[in-house]
Length: 205
Image (cartoon, rainbow, N blue to C red; front, side, top):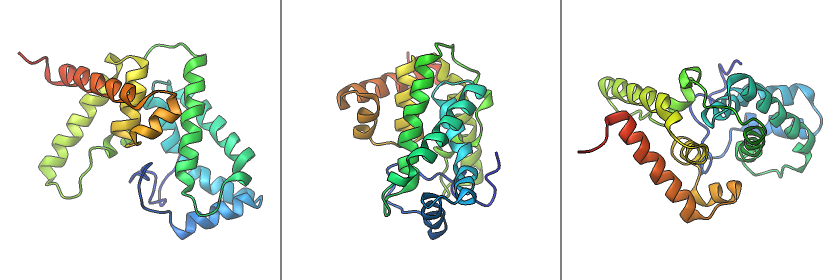
């Protein structure tokens, strides 16, 4: 799953971001819409690692996350002709992938996986280029502790926390994806944060 040279996967093309996509990605999308197999494979190379990591963050084991990634891109291949030029491709892919991952979660009532398998995309939510090296080390250590503690959350809490706090998806968008009210999304997020805070730092006296 090579993302080297993409400039987008590891550094976080964030859902809800106002930034558009590069001309190179726009060109790949337009070529893929026209049936160019090489362009479609290029899009897969750019984004597959992030889709796999998203599946694992949301609770799938690695093999199931790989299956969900494959299913996501099968849907992309099937429906890319419907993608409207001018939109941000990653947002469209992201919404599609989240729904595929949720389908896999519903069909596999498996336990919570070891989060040691999840790599850099979790830490991306804690990056701040303005921080000192010492602060970055502390943030990375905190990210690892949070990552290892996600198993204390219920499935719904975990999904909401991953989407809202790690992936920075707007509350309204999460509500549409999961079929929940914004109040319920916020409640799940608050509960998840409290559980993780207690798990990582210990309950407050």
